[in-house]
Image 1 (cartoon, rainbow, N blue to C red):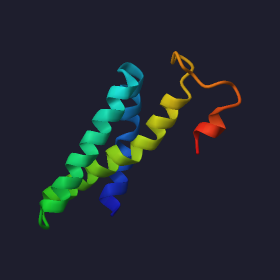
Image 2 (image 1 turned 60 degrees about the horizontal axis):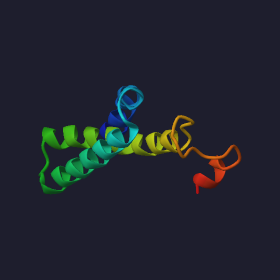
Image 3 (image 1 turned 180 degrees about the horizontal axis):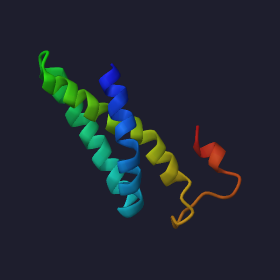
Image 4 (image 1 turned 30 degrees about the vertical axis):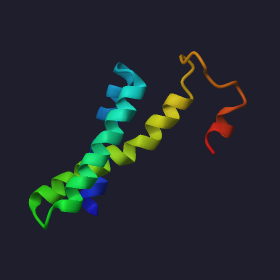
Length: 92
């Protein structure tokens, strides 16, 4: 469990910087695909050190998805950005 948390902490800033440099939707899709791949790898592996590596990857990608989606929702540069009083409604 601690490896998953450490992976989540370790990948927050790199994914955030990538999110600022690339198309945000692509980073979200890559994060979802990576989370799915790490989940499948964890499900089929036995106890090994690779299991911990995939656990860290899972934590790093899955813990970053919510902040990335919230940043994309509240991005004022989007053509269909939210109205000033609507960000709270989008959070539900």
